[in-house]
Image (cartoon, rainbow, N blue to C red; front, side, top):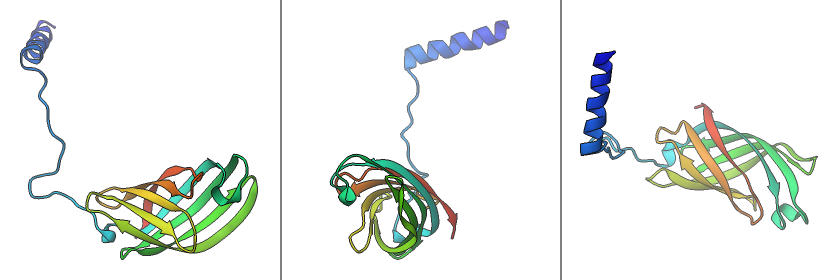
Amino acid sequence: MKRVGLWMAIGIGISITGGLPTVEPGYAQGKEQTCTVKTLKGRYLFALNSTLLPPAFGVTEPTPSFAAGFHIFNGDGTGADIVTFRLGGVTVLENSVAPISYTVNSDCTGSYTVQNGGPSFGLFIAPDGESIAAISTDPPGNGGSDISPRVSR
């Protein structure tokens, strides 16, 4: 016990006099990871629940919404969403397939848009492409965010 107390006292003394060492987060030298559209390739499972606010999707009052499905990213900026969407307790889309387009920045952020007037989302991408965090950005009143893991390539 006395030895443990001595080591604790030394550790506390070093921390007080020199401060705790700080380490800058980063990547191994020469191995900085960057993202490209190729980072997103495969099928990603998602589920969202939110409250839509006017004027999103024509609602006139706050309305609960739920969506579940897959994002399929082709690795070239194109893909598709397969989605079931419920709005105010009514199934509006069931296993509907919609084309998407997406961008990926080198800092592993990006965006995707459901084509033909669908919603848009901001993306935060794991450098290895194994998961994405998405947050709705358009239309106004559309809310929701989720984290989607890659479930197949």
